[in-house]
Image 1 (cartoon, one colour):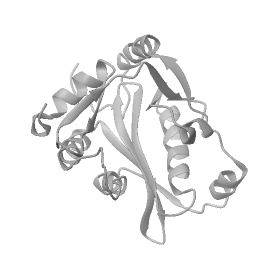
Image 2: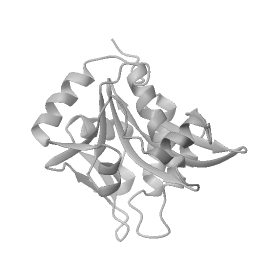
Image 3: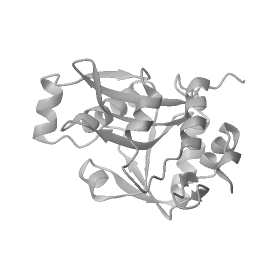
Length: 199
């Protein structure tokens, strides 16, 4: 698939089928992934270490939502071998304008120092990527994101593919078939973040 074929409609259809896109840095194209095991965050909240608890308690960062979506996406870019492409940034920013892509951001002294972004499908939030420029900035943003999700009625927080960092934050895995069942149930629920205007 050529990257320029990516559209919000295609992204929605793919996510509802349990797949998500990643850019190929060599070809510039888009590959779609549906892992056999899906990583989820507990809706009760991420695992909070003592140091993270201190950062939260002391208000080390100002947390905002949806004030710098594209900047958060660009903050997630790596120095090389990026799976986030310019085309993905363009399409996901349009999805944000449509009301179903969101960011949680950590700010310090007026500067964006960390954040996480993703898509909302009914009562499912699919977290895509996060970044930090200061210690705990991304973790505080993620903690705030899951708290916000629970507050507005989201029941499923997707973390996609497990890694040691996600596991340290309390993520767990479920089989693909179970994830699809949970996703279908969640998508039938309206929440203020899903951006749907149809009946």
